[in-house]
Length: 121
Image (cartoon, rainbow, N blue to C red; front, side, top):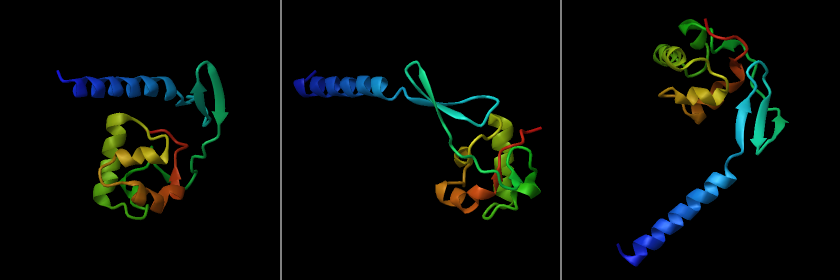
């Protein structure tokens, strides 16, 4: 192995080690509250991340309910329901970007209309 590849490997390992030490500040959600916590080592700091409380129930709504959202038609509403059944309830608006056809730009069109207060059936 050439010296250049060994140096590149060492640099990659160094970067990975730094990321593993620096990035462990993860967001965790308390299961029964809307409060989100950022964990830094052993300390936990509460941060209020606002979750919209609109009128369209994302986790319990049927296809017709979801089609009230701008830009969501029959196909996307079925994809949302399929994603919900496969992977469980959505907790944040950004969770909807897991649905093929919903990106951040489309999400911004209806973010404030979403309601996450009700769980799925």
